[in-house]
Length: 258
Figure 1 (spheres, one colour):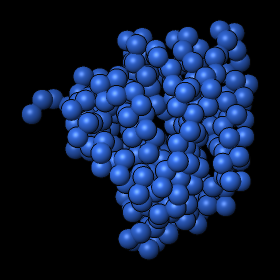
Figure 2: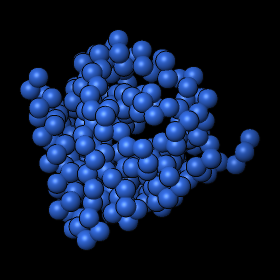
Figure 3: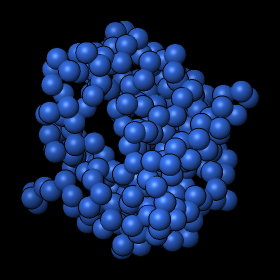
């Protein structure tokens, strides 16, 4: 077996992606009843797809987003996703599998390398702060205070394509975000996590922690790609991130009202 490295960009397998795509699309279409709009905003060249994160690391938003982008761009298109350190560095069997789908460790160096080579990057800036928010906050977009995605787009001169998914946060009911539990377990120090959620999820009933996979509840999902956002070379990262978050929040509000 070849030596594993979480930052390797050469393990992405278009054939493997193409083999999985029909099943992923069937799940999105028939179980999650995904409705997609805004594909006319897909760029031709390198770009940074910035998406909202819902329902946990194993939530259905990632599955639906990737299947839509793979179908629209083609499995051979150099689309990569920035993935959390837990699967990429601490659970390497899963990391090996994710690399075949185009996943690499979430850091600016990897994003810069992909964009410089003409590829596209999918990133979830809100991470655990957004994915594990309480279910009463399911229709919120939480990117701030993280601004690294703005700095990456600005440094590489590429557009940001906001991707907004509505409905995915209902796939599990999060009772508590678990901030105090995360501090007690020192998750930030060894797992780069600030949340330890407690949720109702199938098939477990009560699901503890950020890493437990689950079967999403079959709520319908909506996905919308927004027009490209171009970041000026002298843009303030915090203000630019606030602008992108506002655009995504407006779209999420509109979809939630349908």
